[in-house]
Image 1 (cartoon, rainbow, N blue to C red):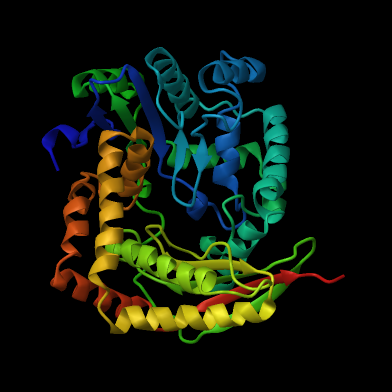
Image 2 (cartoon, helix red, strand yellow):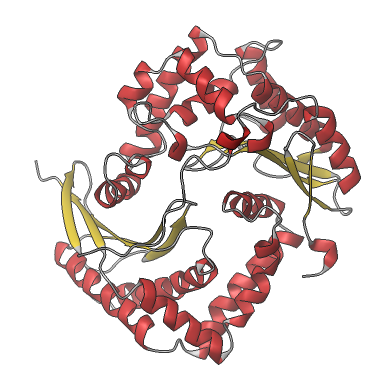
Length: 435
């Protein structure tokens, strides 16, 4: 990778890291504060606490009440969901816009978010309001959407109820309802500390970013319990399933049957991650052809045959999802998926497929560094959370992708497919409820 596109990084004396890439061609900027906390860090009896805390932190400050804060956001990022990069995932919580915005607005937002996370205001009224909002969001974006429900269903089957992975990011609504301000304060004190936070700031020169970040955060003292800030949850080694399973549930108000298949893979810190990403693209393309273009029946076939990889520092899953109007076609699709996985594990991928998908992924990777800062922000965050704090793996990903175009690289992909995709899987199916 050319040096001018590489992302630079630095660290303050209190442990807070920052990442930056200079873009002299644009006067716009994007800055995101990332806190290494998500649903995986929720206490067992308070599932959803990280997400609830994100809601409450963004509601008001010591200076701005809830309405003034909302007006502040609307002027700089639009209405909710327009350009908001305020999110909670399994392992990270972010605060910032979702794309480039005016320099003035970006810096005002960064200053406000810095104040919010350093000095969170936790009040009884706001807590009640945001609990209700999280409750509605859990259905609006999750449980009333069958694609999200089947995803949650898959995780419920694969992971025991004692695991944080068993639960959606929104958590358990009964836990959310009973969460107290004391619970929220304790969670904030544990995870909202400078050594557990990093800033991704794209646009200005490194020296300018360093100065801005230092002004906002250098006065923030590190936690007294620094050791606890590392990983609360240890990385688990890849473990294949002992047997395959299939579970079905009914859903009212739908016409199609949905199927989701999950295969355990390594965590995000694994060296196999890039190869698995390539395999997912190739398998999705193959299944799209077989399940859509080879189908001639009016009531069968699919619109999409999506395959993707989900990984955190704790787990990894290779996932396949389809929806179809014919129940029998679900069984046929499951069989074809297994056959194509076995084919990946037993045969070299064709040169055409490799050139197509490695070429696409490599172009997409390069474009993130040159033309798509919002994608680069996401890539940096994913890399840091997976342990690549110096971004060495991220900067080398382009060369790794190209290495798969050689015969040795194609052999490597076959070996990785054999390692992960040739064993057992978990299948979940959601069918229309006839009642």
